[in-house]
Image (tube, rainbow, N blue to C red):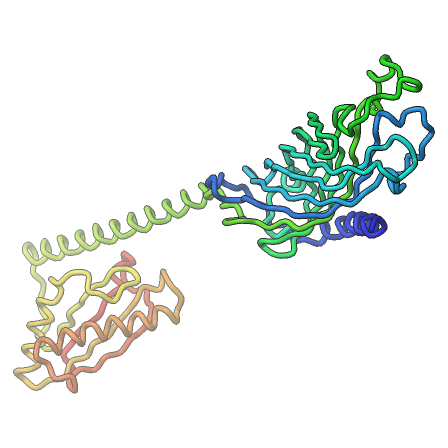
Amino acid sequence: MRKLFIALAFAGFAMSMNAQETVPVQQYSVATNSFWSNWFVQAGVDWSAWYSNEEHGLGLSHSPFKKFRSNPGASVAIGKWFTPGLGLRTKLQGIWGKAVTDDNNAGNGMKYWTLNEQVMLNMSNLLFGYNPNRVWNVIPFAGGGFSRNCSANKYAMQLSVGLQSSWRLSDKTSIYVEGGWNRMEEDFDGYTTNPAFYSKEQSKRGWGSKDNHLYAEVGLTFKLGKAKWNKVPDVDAINAMRQSEADAMRAQLDDANAENARLQKLLSEKANTPAPVKPFVTTPVSVFFNINSSEIASQKDLVNVKALAQYAKDNGCKINVTGYADSATGAAEINQKLSEKRAATVADELVKMGVDRANINTVGKGGNNDLSPVSFNRRVIVQVAE
């Protein structure tokens, strides 16, 4: 049993060096989750070594694998990570212990339990940033609590410290190897100091003045509820998106102002200096559109189209409908499809006006830059066929 724990510990730390180097970096800043997120439970088995203050001066072997000072045990724990780097754990550990007063294994066994509240620091997240796909995490911990020797009916306060190394098996499960030290009161094991070898002054110095419990443990961690952390909103990206939306609205406003200026100019020219007009049958009518849209920008444009449609119906003429897009925006393939959709939209309006679909010829000419401003190129030309 103890050889198995040694092998697991050495294998774990060897694997950890490779695991940390091969995990792709996906670290990012995180926001605090709700209280019910990032809880976990742990269950493990351990191999313990006991060092009592009573053994001072007896010349006993200090090997943690001697039968007179070692025993197996088990543990369970529940905890929560409040940030990716800081957590708390309540750990219950125990079953079989040893009171080391000599090297005779018979009769020095005891049953016990310890309850510790421990602060845990995930150094992998603290040093390298949070990464939800990291395989290996190194977690030192420290805390305190109390213990009970059930065999001797003794309670004792204690301090604890240790190091845990865990490996991710899935989003909800990981395996861990842990080594720790519980430092207890000197009479926890049910015995007092041997006065022949251990003076009161000596008892104030060194770890030998207390009962000590060293252990190596292996177990599984199960994450409860939401086990990952939310990303902090990217303020720069949000601001950039809002700026892009504002720029788009400003561009639409500029197009509307340009169109308004064009119409005012046309009205002024017609009122003040009327120019010779071509025969109605050959005069083209324009219908304008907004950027990246196949919906008619202004229904006013259909007034002249309706007059042309009536002429075509009265005289049995065909009508040519030609769609355009502005080449200043969009790829050529997109502009071609957009010009065809615009022509189809105007053709549908002609059908609503009573023109036979068979007498309407539609074609899309794609993007062009014949007119200025750019918005004038987003149009459909309707003309009676000669």
